[in-house]
Image: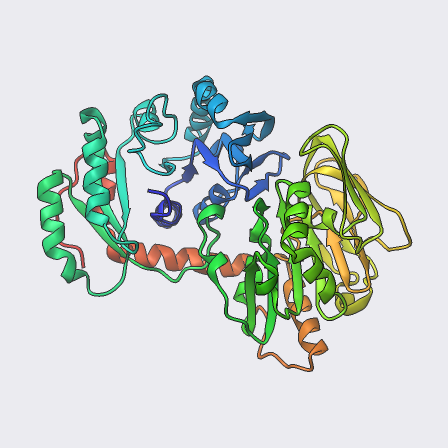
Length: 497
């Protein structure tokens, strides 16, 4: 089922296989997510496969995620194939169309086969969603297409794991069930020996061995956007950061780096009552800038954020940056059409255009005024994914100067003024000491002295998390059995320490 931990286990297997000397790559034929990434070629893919590629020690490629669906509303999505937008489709239209994409899936997979000894394939949701099984291209239909063995993962933390696993197997066709070589019970808390009677019965009733009982892990890696537990955090630390949780929030991975700094809280808020008195308010990316701005206006969050101006620093990224201006216009009906008044915190106007900007950038912060003056002159890296063009309409200075990594073009980006900041760059806080500079400035503003900032580069920190993940899986997953399955054999049950 969704949130059983598939993405994390794929990442862990990728790291183990890399450590064992194999060339390994992740693959997910179809991903639905608003957290996306721009590759070195300027192509768009889901961030879950980027995380898994990092664990595998290789650069991300759209071959790892040939189809990305980015929901635009409750019944439709932007469809991205091989990193390029092909258009918006309703769920019904996409369901009828998706088998046309099988050649793209096969081509992407075969391209990965040229580069990898092992490919770890992640499904989506559940393989037993019988209303979606016809024309399946991501679960058992894909396993058949690739002639792949399958591990079935169940989430015991939510309860009902035996029913999850047995029920799923019961709903599979015989030829599909034959592909399932092992069961994995994930997110277990406590003494695993308590499970022994249930595991015996599970194996007897299913005819499939349990190859691992994986404990609930305290691992900090990027997760699927719709299923994250980050949104549930409410505790406030010495330095409190509030991220506005739009209905169509995208790329909230921009703020993961701050979660690693002691004395800092990152809260996601979706009502004025939850905002409280944060030191910094982030307006994140959005897949529907106009709709999410109207949502803020209707539920009182816009007024609450503007009321905090002066006491809280305000920082917008991409769609959140667009909202900070005087207006957002949509002459081509990219989103909702028409023009909507912005929050009027920065003197700029945005026009949504049909061409999607997708590029990796590097650059330098200009002379930054206000609380975050310590950013001045610092280098930055990141990527842009947006449909709009924003033009300054007043005397505010650009936040930074960017260089397009593909063609070398230079351009100003973002605005800053009166402790309100904005940029189109995703990932801007991940490099060097930028996140620490922001937190130290906020602490100094409050007269606080934090013990330390982020003591290592964020990339180095993520490497420690992938190694920790691999170490845990080696202890609780029968990797000898996994290798036997990979070599075309069946799993032979043995005791797992």
